[in-house]
Structures are given as C-alpha cells and as structure tokens.
Image (cartoon, rainbow, N blue to C red; front, side):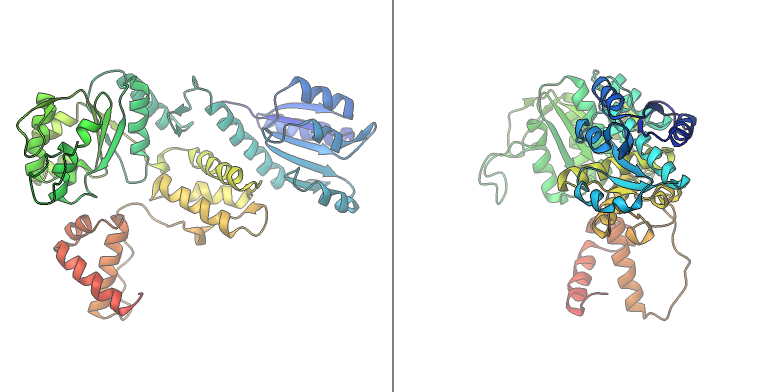
Amino acid sequence: MRGNPPSVLLVDDDRTFLHSARAYAQMKGCEVSTASTVRDATDLVVQNKPPDLALIDLSLPDGSGLDVIDKLDTARCGDIIVVTGHPDLDSAMQGIRLRISDYMVKPVAGNRLDALLERASLRAGLRHGRSADNPARCGEMIGASRAMAYLFEAIRRVAPLENTVLLHGESGTGKELAAHAIHELSGREGRFVAVNCGAVTPDLLGSQLFGHERGSFTGAVRDHAGYFEQAQHGTLFLDEFTEMPLPLQAYLLRVLEAREVTRIGAQQHRQLDVRVVSACNRDPWAMVREGRLRADLYYRLCDFPIRVPALRERDDDVVLLAQRFLDALNETHGTRHSFSHASLKNLRSHPWPGNVRELRHAVRRAYVMANGSELNLAPEHGLRSGHPGERPAGVWKGQTLDQLERDAIEQALHQCGNDKTRAARMLGISVKTIYNKLVRYRGEGPA
C-alpha cells in the first residue's frame, strides 16, 4: 500500500490484540491510531479526520464502543467493524446493524483483516483522488497507475492549446471522458458536444454535423444548426470518425482548414471557433491504407495523438474503479456492500477485454445478485475470458449452416455495440442483408 496511506482506528482494551493489529496494519502501510478507552477514542475521533477503517471493541473499561461509533461521521468513514470476544452479543449487534459494516469475533482471521485493510487502501485512494490538485484524477477519470499518470499529463499539457486531438484506444476505455476532461481544462466557454459518427446514418450525418437550411432537401421543414455551430466557442467530439463516408470527410477537412461552415442549401459561411477532438477504436492508419480514410484528414485530426490505455495495462486501477462503482451504488441505494476477498482476486486476474465498460457492468450485476452485504464478483457475473481479437476454438457442435450464420451475425452485432453498419462491414455483407436476417430471426424466436 503506497501513495496515499489509509488511516485505521483501533479501539480495544485487549493489549495483545491492539498491539498485534497495529503492527500488522503498519506493516501493510497504514497510518494507525489506537485507544483502549472510550475517552481516548473520542479524543482521537474529534481531533482526526474520519478513518478509512475503524475496528472497535464493544466492552471498554469506561463504557461501550457504541459511544465511540456515535461520535464517528458514518457518512464519511470507511468500514466500521465491531470486534468482540463474546459471540453472545449478537442480539446487540442486530440493533446497530445499519450503523456498522460488520462485526467479527476474536481471533480475527488473517484473510478477513487483509480484505478490510485492502478496502481501506482503496478508500484512501478515492478520498485523495477527489482533490482538485491531485494527479490521480483528471475530469471524471481516476487512476493511480503509471499509464494513467501519463494520460493525465498529456491531457493537462494540450488542453489549454488549440491543437486538434486524436484519442485512440480500445472500446470501453473512456475516450469520451478523456475528451470531456480536455474541454473542462481548456477554459473554453462554449459547450461540449459529442457525436458518434458510426451511429448516425450517412444520409443524415452531413446535416447533423454542418446543419441545413429549410427546404434544402425533402423533410427539411426548418433551419437546423449542426453540431459545429452548437459547439461554437466550445469543443466538438467526433467519436468513431473513421466511419464517416469519404465525401463527408472532404467537407470536414475543408471546414477544419477554413474554420468556417456552410449549412446544406445555404450560401452564407459561418465563422467557427471550435476545438475538435476525435476518437476511434480502430487503427486509423490502417483505414488510410484501405482507402476508407483520407490521409490529409487523418493528419489534420492527428495534430496531437493520445492513447487511452486498456484496463489490463493499468495495474491495480481495476480494484480502484470497482470500488468507485460500488460506492456509487451504495450511496444511491443506502447500502454498505463490500467486495469479498475472492472478488478482489478475480478483479485482478481477469483480462477485461471490454475494459472499464465491462467492469462497470460486472459490478452492477454482482451487486444485484448479492445475497448479503458482501459481493462475490465471479465469472458468472459477466466476466469474459480472453483478450480483444481472440476467438474461441472453431469446434463444430452439430449446428446447421443457418444457425452458424445466425451466431456469426449476433456475435458481430454484440462486438459492434449493435451498430448494424459496422457489423455488416465486419461480415462482408450489406446492411440490408443484416436487417432482412434480423426480421427473419425475430419471427423464429430467441436463439
């Protein structure tokens, strides 16, 4: 445990337990405060910030450990654990179940103490990450890994400048959050406007980006300001820009070079003051070689490239993010759920091909499926094995050719986030074929 050491409060009149627990926590890198009476513990609570972990005995020489818990700011504390040598106090525990995270009977198992200290370390990282000047946070992104420190530094350096920025990385890594952080740190007064170029049909994308005048085409019943105009004095985020048709790429290049836009069907040019940030999860230079992306547009958008790292490259950030997602669920639903020790091991061992998006969904599912206050995040909660691009061994299991075709279409749609255009390109078929197949499958029922 390095960086921001977690704070631990130990309150117990058992000197042997107090000294051994303090030594163990300090060995793990924690800052430890100890007390053996209610009076001394109360003084520590008043003088210090809420601890990331509190282990409190109920039976103290001058009163009850409940008196100490009453002084704690439970909304800002980490785990509050009652430690007792008398299991028959279970009835008393039920009365304060909503005030504490859990209680343990001595002797305390080492793996349970390890899990508590690890959660305290995560809370300490999140607590320090909320500081505006701390490098572990940039916009809505958090991370303590070297890869994220490099990303945050690059964002902070380029944000105040006028460079166009190209964010590249795998799907689900948080490229839109990075774009939003660039906007927040740029000092620009206008809006942050985001558009997914792969999710808008090619026929409408030009109108959505550049705007149109009333009557310029069938259905244009009123004037429309495009995304460029909506982002005036702000930032326009072009996600999946490699999916843009070539004719629109030529017009986009002209808009970026001239810093002015002409609505479809209009004669008047409108001056622009817009910062452009683009993103893609495919290799843009490979798209240039394939003739699907203009080289001059690539160079214009790639003025300052930034790679957003995959979650598997971020060391222990996976546990930090998982705890953040769980804390948000606890706050929303008024619970105090925590991860089991096995869950922490699963979080670290899984390669997370879906990156942060997959992690968030896995935590949510584990929360829904939890039977008690402890979450057991396991493969059945949505953890997939393998890395992006890996495919399962080609074992035929007796499916018909039609069934194999259906499986391929459904897997392509899943991998492309239900984007039928991209799925069709991946499969080498037309979008019309995708739609016709889906209509047929809908009549046949679920796979």
